[in-house]
Image (cartoon, rainbow, N blue to C red; front, side, top):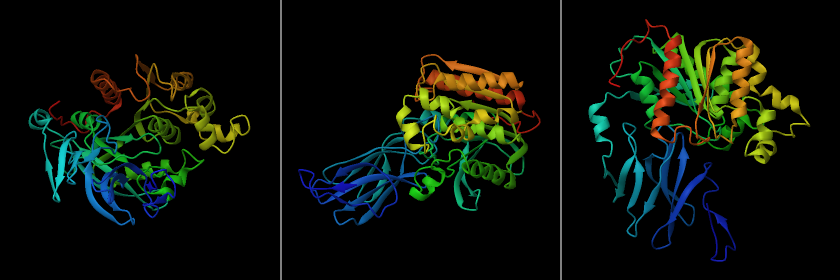
Length: 389
């Protein structure tokens, strides 16, 4: 975050020491400071920055923007007297309007009271994970209402996209629906995720996917060691980059009973030449163009691992997806069919990349399809209890 003269001359950074990206900023009424939001360890925070760079933390419970998955998000505004209005949550419900006034937080709305009062919702807690090389990885676990301590549960690993993005302990309709179907749900921020600084994000620079796979598997192993997950009833899903990692995982291990890859990258060469981010992909995610070093593109493509796949895999994509085009999903579906792997292709009519679950009806149908696919391959003796749907 920079400030400068009114003609933008003499810019200087107020946050050069802060190894996080500024999301949004607003001036105080008297122009003596700036309020800014940034993501840190899976939480969106707001702080006040003096013009000398001094920071005063104010909030850490911003939420909102995405309801189906637990992405970090939230917005704020500042009044003339310094009161902050923001979208916030304690994780037990979708975001409401909150106020911070005179140092006190207060929720103004309860827009989803009918949901929270009439439904049995999963509880969410943080779990400790040591990643592929021993570095800590943030992860969260949701367990179905009524789950009995000591009873092993089928586990869904939910992987975020990006990879420059982050999950957090936010409300997620996907998580709640999986839990209502009797699954424990795990999500994590493997290396490459945002909100942990440049070094952590760049651990997969020009090398994606790679050791982020090890971080995700370590998170699964942590839930097994914690006594929650049944090691013989593991399932995996994710969208976009998470869809690619889902396909990468089932190409690397047969530990999962079923998978659902959503709007995935399958072949980096074809993706680089058909995506709406063509120049970005080739220029920043690889050292050379596809025709200059096709082996590097192929080495990071889940398509290269299809010969190893034994896991029944559902493939989902929006029919109007131009970021990870339909041809990526079609390639994977065809390859799995040729390899004799149980598979199913679902195209969501009229849905783009960011809109695969934009309409509530599509969001509900998408999750219902994934649960039905997982239920088909789940051991029926494990995790029998169901919450109120």
